[in-house]
Image (cartoon, rainbow, N blue to C red; front, side, top):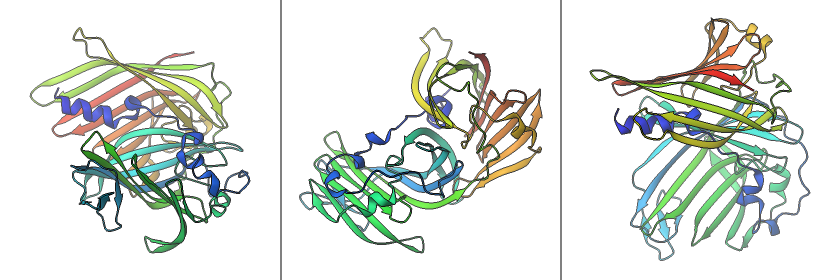
Length: 397
């Protein structure tokens, strides 16, 4: 199996790659030097539009600017310049969609799943899933993506300690936002976050950070839409057992099928050790092992995850919710990523829900009696080859 296919799959399956749990306190927006600009009391509660299942979509991309040894700053015209006034143009990179899914909104905690998709064809808009990362926030903010409006209104314009805050109208997608931008620029790089003061949402971001001695990595994101997805399980209450005392182990096969070459099955396993409950979401430690069977040690990885009822492929869906679904029912269609979520039907006492795009289909099989995720199946077309992954619940303890 060519290494390029292996690497693409490892990048494009969140069951392999996993997530990083991000606490609000890790976000530089919530520590000095911005603190002197803030005079508001801590926020209480969440806006009404924040509901489990809500999807916030951004167009996003990144690239490398070669031969740029100093930190860069944008000029607003698509170019970047350094502290000596030299101008640079971005080089090669990739574009796609970053979709922030709110998987739970409790009294004190926001839980979200940030799902990244790469654009396969700019003409057709086809996308493929790349990775997923879990975020946890509070009423004071959710990473870089949301700051309570009261906190934004309490920030004063000005520049202090490399941070500049500007309050100004911002036109985007035919709408003009009452915005607040927070920019940081020093020899470690540049970041700018622009927020809609009415909702607290980040609507635009850009950054540049030196890589090694001779280049800069730049990235950008721009809000496309905010919509409430009508996932039938978004408000299912997670069972009491979904806490720090339980673990789910899945075992199966990672198989590549290449015409003229044949099949190449590897042993594959994933476990989810539940670590802490957060409202109607739960954090988990994910461990995976891929054994190529060639005498080499298995490839192992460990990462943090967060699961909630408002996500795609959760660990649990209530049996009564599963019973109310109809075969071939289209549950959701996402325009930016060209994704369809479909209830496929019931087979061997498992209810299968598919997450479909043009080149790949993920299927999640749920036990009709317990609601527990029992099977994970992926079929992905890459060039002339096919990747098939089949995992089944082996231990539930």
